[in-house]
Length: 200
Image 1 (cartoon, rainbow, N blue to C red):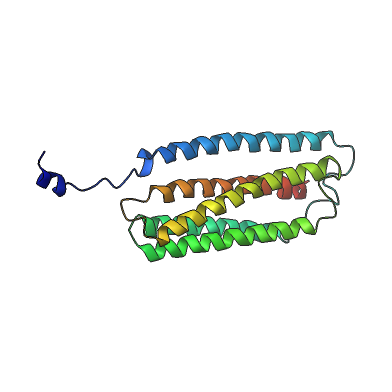
Image 2: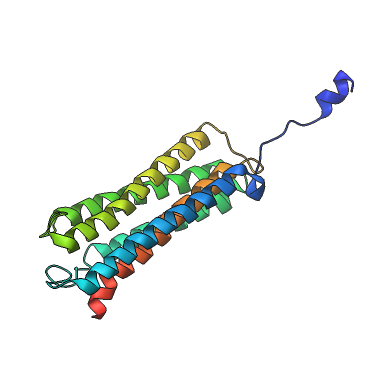
C-alpha cells in the first residue's frame, strides 16, 4: 500500500460498546460482586432468624437519613445516564463534564451522609451479631461506592482532557455500568436492612 493511501485511511478510534473488552470485564466483575452481596445478605437474614435478642438493636432503623440518601444515589445514576447519552454519545463535551461532575458530587454526598448515619448509631461493629452484620454489609457497599467515585473522577479527568468523542467513549459506558450496579445494590441493601424491619 502506498504512503498516500495510508494517509487517507482514518486511524482507529478504539473499541466501543459491546465490542470493548472492558464491557465484558465489568459485567464479570458485577456478577462476582453480586454473588458476594447475596452471601452477605443471606448471612444477615440467617442470623436474624436465629437471634435471641433484639433485632435490629433499638428497633427498626430510622429512615431519616437513609431514605434521602437513597434518592441522592439514584439521582447520581440519573446524572450519569444523562452524561453518557446526551454528552458522550453525541460528542457534547460540556454535557458530559456536567453530568460526570454532578454524579461525582452526589456520590460524595452519599458517602458523607452514610458516615454521619454510622456516627449516630447507638451500636458498633462489636455490638453482637446485628451490629457486625449491619456494619459489614453497609461498609462493603460503601467501599464499592468509593471505588466507583474513583472511577468517575478518572473519567472526569479524561473528559476534561478531551479524550472522548461521539465514537470513542467506551470507558464512559463501562464506568457507568459499575456505578449503576453500586446503586442497584444499595436499593437491595436499603430494602433488606431498613425497609424490611419496618414491615415487621
